Image (cartoon, rainbow, N blue to C red; front, side, top):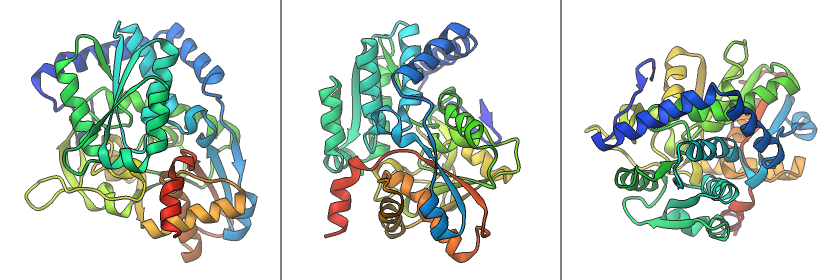
Length: 373
């Protein structure tokens, strides 16, 4: 499936049958009321859905806006990742795959994968860049405590891109018994569509809880929390804003290319070689963005901006001190842009702004401690 000029399936020949099997299984499962009902039950009873929509009264007064926060930080495991992983873990079991693998950057997808595997009786292996293993040691411990094997990846930049590459290489050799649980709206078809559908619960709930705001804002790395949120507002007049890390802004600084099985906007040099991304948040430290985001960018339906690490740190502290909420550094990118846009007048005074708070910041405390020394 393609989204305009983006998407597709660019994988080694041995993975084509595996991807086709996933696509067929997902289409069958998504049309099955029994599968949907089981997923809904797990989301409600295990993940704690629906998550709340919180009016940020103090932040709103400070910025001259009407800000509400979609609280994915309150979901089980501490982020939106559990929405997608429960769906894919159920699909793996439905396909008869006893083992799931995953990539992770900030560790939240890895923790969600380990959690779902423990719940459903599956074996789990999580690939994680060595740099991220070091800066997200709490989540590494959580994954291992839940029974997952964590494999440090020492190649390249030792971050999310290299973990994803290693997971795909591993899948090539283990397609018979292994399901690859992709963590974002990236990868070969059907993953971008499938992950967006599993994450659409965020936007559906938010629209039902608070109606249609003037602006919908979410951080974007691979882009799953943003895609899940935006999907419920595509048919409205709401302005959709995706906020990237300045050092990983594929949609604002990249060019079309192919990475990890899909065509989309990729950070690359003049020779088409992938350029390493940088972000203070491990979850946005990725040089590409999901293909549907590329299509929304091209069509003008969504706009993409970037913020710096310093702005993110300031936003993290500001939300903590105004609302008593410690956001994940990833989520703080969305807060940072809203703060900046309120100051510059890009957001008109009194505008209603929905921000998806994709995760909580417990995992980032060591990074925050280092930044404040």
